[in-house]
Amino acid sequence: MIDFSLIETLRWQPGDGFIRLRLHLARLLRSARRLGFPQPTDAQTKLEAAVAGAGGPLRVRLTFDPQGRIEVSSAAFVPLLSETIWTVRAAETCLDSTDRLLRVKTTRRTVYEAARAEYTPAEADEVILLNERGEVCEGTITSIFLDDGSGILRTPPISCGLLAGVLRTELICGRRARVGRLTLADLDTGTLYLGNSLRGLIRANLLRS
Image (tube, rainbow, N blue to C red):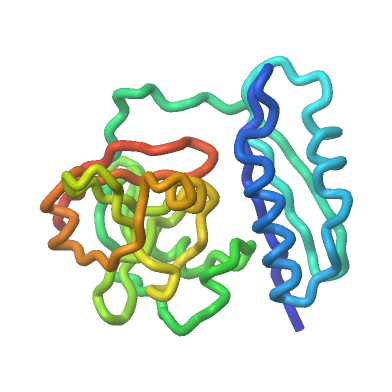
């Protein structure tokens, strides 16, 4: 029995509407098909209803359960300053590259919560997870990108055991990023960025414990 829901977290801006809406809806549809959920046919309608009359940026969260029920909630969102640099650390908690559910965004977040709990918010803004082979996978809420000086960001392949992030998909499709396996040592050789569709790309500084 499936005991989790699919989830999409979107950014809504006055004048722009939902950022990367098409990619979010495409991922939701693809994930529903993969897991045998009903089709989320009214997802966009419910999203639009949730932001009706909003006057400022919002963080909008949509969940879709195995019975086809959609719930949408929203909260005020404050974008990060462009000069923000996050402090990140690597977790002892590992991801299992053979767990295919890691490729789908769901409310099943135990492993990410365990990794996040290894450090206090003062010690790390985000925590990076590796797989059983020591390959870099993703952050608890972000995809990982390395600027190695080639002009195209490198980001780990899905086969390492990670989510197909919406921002990641956009950057790959736009030829601003390419897939390539990464180790922690690799992250010291260039400029590290983390990112998701809500916040965009964020410069990051990896600290060793």
